[in-house]
Each structure stands twice: as structure tokens, then as C-alpha cells.
Length: 150
Image (tube, rainbow, N blue to C red; front, side, top):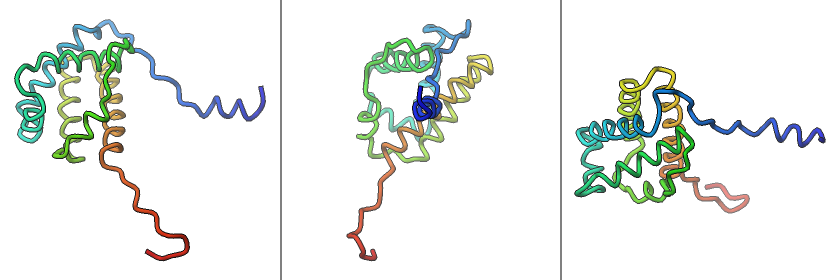
């Protein structure tokens, strides 16, 4: 192994591992998702946004989000969607809305899971929120012509 390949290997972040916790399985994650979205639906700011996007039966969305969080937390591979395009079309969402979402998420995780497990949920949710915010709100300034002042 060369020095370069050794440095490259060290620079790669470790892959997230499935959470191995007896209190966390598909059933408990499903309960978490249901309780979390019940709170979101009642939230003064986020409730109307979700109501515009999910009309009628919330069952399919709850199942999709259960698949998503099982994939994130347990590495189950159940989720096959594309969250970034789904969020990019939401024009009335602000960066501050993610803070509200994360607060409700953390409160719900703390109510339903042991502190160590809740911390894993929150950490992964924060990473996902950061990725979505970058996709939705980060824009580079237009490049200026070489040698010209803007």
C-alpha cells in the first residue's frame, strides 16, 4: 500500500452503522413517525405547509417516512425515494422551518427513545436537514468575467 492510498483511506469518513438498540425496530420507528407527524400537523408554521402537500390520507406518507427512517437508523434499505427533488419543489419553505422541524423531531425522539438512541436519531436528522438546506438554499454568486470587478 502506498502512502497516498493510506492517506486516502484515512480521509474517508466511516460509514454510518445500523443502530443496534433493543428499543429501536420498525415498530418503534413507525410509532415515532406517527407521533412526530401528528405534532407537525398541529404546528402553526409547518402544519399548513404539510397540509398543502399531503391532502387526504396520510397513511402512504407515514409508511414512506417509516421506510425512510428505518433505512436511516437501521440501514434496512426499505426506502427507495428521492428526498431532494421532493423538497426542491416546496417554494414556501424557509431555512428557519428546518429549525422548527428539528426541534419537534428531537422532542419526539427524546420522548420515545432512550437518550443514546434519541441522540442517534437527532444526529442523523441534523445531517439530513443540512443536506436538504444546502440543496434548497445554497447558490453560488454568478461568476464574473476574468479580470473584471463586479
